[in-house]
Length: 351
Ligand code: DOR
Ligand code: ZN
Image (cartoon, rainbow, N blue to C red):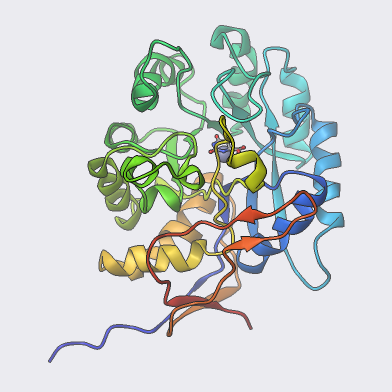
């Protein structure tokens, strides 16, 4: 007899291992959407100016907690923005004091607010060696920035030219290759089990480059790294649903106002905080892997970051297509919510 497909799924409360909360009015508008579903998140430091020092990270954490609505629980896990002037001792002290969970490496010019990022990796070697020594993870935006490298090849080339050499020189460094978008990145992570893991975003499991460019240009699907061919999306889904401990959720939910996205040179970033869990449930269900959603969203991340998984649970319930806003209003202007292109039947049941 055919089994009835499940309509309820209880998992440990998920975490988001890569999130942009921004600051000020935008922070205040987007934070409740993440805190509604996620217990913790790795908070990206690419503010203007960037969060470089332990003191800046502590102040940013305070600003986040100050606008967390009453009754919500959420723990921001702060990161430091790596520059060529970063002081290894400041990094170690911030980690030791529990202020900074990880450091973020942006190659200079790779993405939004990355101008103060790293141009020459040899300059940050003392910081990376220190992090290897103390076991502090390095989150990497893995794309080269050379103008002569095609944008669809920038992740693959980064792995070969930058990531692999760093890992060979500093084998103790615990690396998270962020928002992987290619089969090559998935293979590299699978083939190199030591001190290496990867986050995968919600949107890269759903869109490919046609979503952005075929039949009209769709700025709301533009993000970095840019979505690749369908075969890469399929490789990402296979990695995510496999349960492999080294792949976990980092939404890279990155709100920009519509005014910033819809212009001749629009910003990169997709806002998925509101409907990520519903989107993921659809993706995992379609792959016949609902049971692995907990590994991807709630278990693998804490294991790699050497933190306990959350004790609380959330229940996803399948029913009529979900109503969620197409746009949220923020003090900075409207922000468009990710449209996966199909109805979402799973909602997160709040206790
Ligand atoms: O699409 C992106 N948006 N990719 C990034 O790396 C940065 C992010 C942002 O901050 O908007
Ligand atoms: Zn990001």
